[in-house]
Length: 450
Image 1: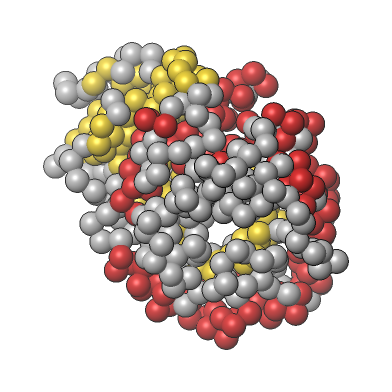
Image 2 (image 1 turned 180 degrees about the horizontal axis):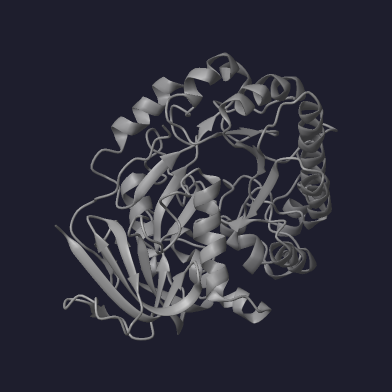
């Protein structure tokens, strides 16, 4: 029987950060002992003052396999996750080919990942107008929930949902009790494509906050109407960028509607005024907005309106990013930074009065609960899977492209100084990453809803 025992003066548990010894057998936590306990095993490893945290759960990752593995793929994405202390991912239904809008497409994805997972991985389904008739079967096939766009996704196989489509899909989502993830941008006016060129401010102006605000108001309206008919649809706003929408979300939550929201490191650590023209690596949708908007998002996290932080890792090839030409207008939109979420967020959060226990809550516990994995992932607690990261919260260093473990060694965070380093990652009690190296072979498992 494989047994692991780790001791630290700073272990993040349900009781807060405490000195403890965590014991695991066969991949499951069996005991959390005081450091003075007589039951501590002889083989315990003392981590000193390094922080022992629950493995992070990132519920918003575009892995792009099968079909666009030149953009990413399960092997490199899950390696980058392990290097970032992430022990569980949930994969998005695009930009893979086929998009995951049917049971058959999910089966193709499951076949493609065999032997490639360095961490555990669940899956979101997708809903497009043409797939609503197959939605029952998709939601019964093991996906953890489903996602739609309210605007052009950039992928022709994944068109946007109109209001009449949402009205058909939402009762089916409610019947299954699974979250409905919404890319909330809505262009009521059918705006003509803007002339952007290489100017970041032109790109920012081309996707205004109103698009997010209006999309979120629509989802709130539909939730309210359904609730009046006794139907409770769990709507989740992905990668919230517009802080102007926070008040509407908070009001809907106070009303008792099942509305939740996430945001991402790029919206919390970057701001539009500092983005130079021609730097396509910063392009994403919705866009990175102004400094004042960023501070309001941090306040919404403090207030609990935004419930957790996820990467929205959305990679592509350097060629599609138009790095050399600086053509922001035609560059693919998406931020590549899967492994750096914890140090990026900790660097900013500690300046705002957050604690490391908040990092575990915002990036592990809450994300696990949202994805339906909260009974066995996201906490250091007895009976939970022994997913851990060891964190040196004091080490300062610049992010470099050489550190990148995802497929293409590019990131908008190059040369950004951060504080905090993931030293090790354990998956179900087994060491998978240590000191910038991967250990053994891929041991991750697909996670399917039952």
